[in-house]
Image 1 (cartoon, each protein chain N blue to C red):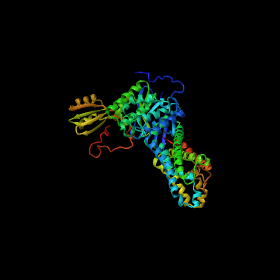
Image 2: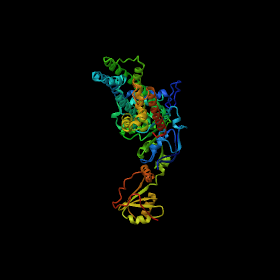
Image 3: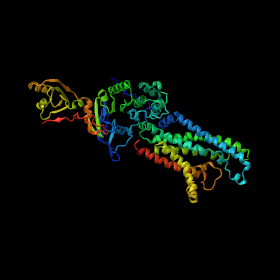
Image 4: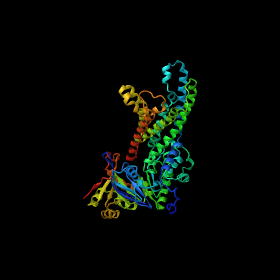
Length: 275
Length: 319
């Protein structure tokens, strides 16, 4: 019989076992960076974001001679080269969902919450990490789409330059927008806990809600549509403000408010519910 | 270093999973947490580590609620379900992520992986893990923080014979080091070999809280099997208040409430020939089944029923 194992040595200050925010963040980083599926989905999002933008720009350039003056005038070069966000947002939103629901479906969440019984640090760490990773990769992808698409459009006398503050805002905005979409996915994952339900919600919010604008008539289109999360948020990626859209930063703020609401609901559910 | 459960209640809608449980789990021994499936063992264990919120009552671990420990994994290690790991992670990554939350590093992870015998598959993705490997990983997770208290929910499920023996030895060693070990099972046979103390629950209620030795003593007095040429006369002779005689075969009586000596004496005095006079000791398993008889959620019909034989345990009381 030995008591050696239970008499613990006093660890030096700062290294003693204790749950801290940076440590929870590190734990979540180990999970995210270890998973092959995360890397693959991020790579797909990257390709969609950069590739579709370049492709749209190329198609626009090819059609340039057939476009009327009016069409040319209303063309938003930023929206053209950043158009990949429409596809990338689905991949990013679903990735955010799965970062959470995979833990629920495997049962690992119970180990996670046993290690961090305060629970909220897990939510904040997942959202912070996920937003940061998405912002970094998607801003890089937006930049590549911008450079590739921009060089094509430049041939049509549509010079795009990052020294144009609106353009710089749009490119950075693509990263910000997708980071918030990812965060929304994480929040929905914690709220619904099932992959199927949360993915359906992401698709519904990003694809189906905006359709209501075209179905429910002009009042809805004028007064509700611009405030839907992705309609509001995507304003930050435009350089020409279209009708029925919010000002870029106003729109982005509205989107952030939606995300904050979802996060608050997720935090409440996480703390109140049995795991 | 005790787990103290006091007046614990957990209701889901109108179903009461745990009904006013009070017990204490002490250090230095293995406490078996025993009950039929659905008795509320897992729910109780989840409440101990704060995963489920009690409807009423409280649980403390080494003097405070689990969630109030700054580094909970170093106080109490829990295995609540096997293979609860993201299939894309390896065993090492899983433990690193778990330990990282409280500053437990790669060296300790390597130690526990070797300890549970997963050292050679530490970097394989968990997707292909067998239930047995999942259990070993769960045990590694429980030991990660070198905790003073361990709770394990059905840890030997899915383990092979060698694995079962390994867990048994491990738990006995941990208890011998002075740690508190709470181990749940629905099988008495497992407890007989591992536990020092038993907490038996059924339908969420406490049925027994006793040492294993004490439980053995409670085993209803044992019976005596008698084979004789003249069962009917012997039955009449020994019949009196407090004696139960039953018979599942012609010429064979099962007598409770009388010692074999007394039966033999009565038979001898009356010239009844006995072929067998065998004291039967009810096993702990029988005692457990008897104790939880009314508290089993799902039960197959009595195998003897409808075959014309006398129900084995019902007997006939003579008075």
